[in-house]
Length: 104
Figure 1 (cartoon, rainbow, N blue to C red):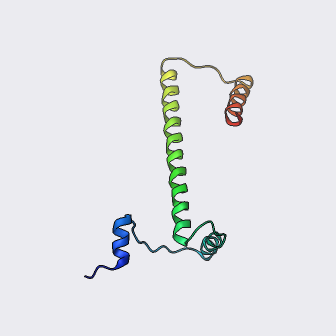
Figure 2: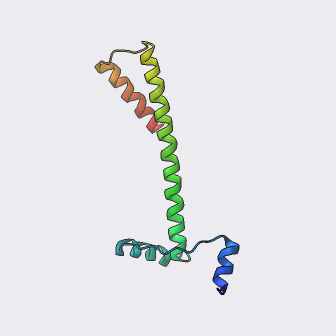
Figure 3: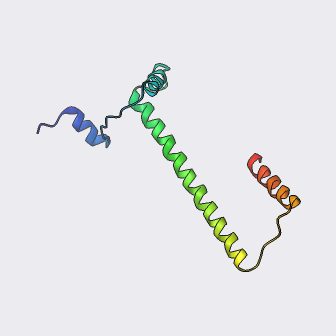
């Protein structure tokens, strides 16, 4: 098998060539991004989008792990009899606390 210039470039740049099928809508969106001049090629758009998806999923996994940890802590507290009755005022306090955390 003969090695091409593309093969050599991909080896040195550690790039893998992959064919991806897009819907017409996504294809048009990718082309529109390239036309803005912010990206040099469709591949750059797709790589950037995949990096963002990767970051999003990493953050989501961290939040899920944190939530699971908090849940386990709550269950342990329940097992030890450390709980409070839930009434309207207590629920509002929790909501207010969550809103404050969300909005700074």
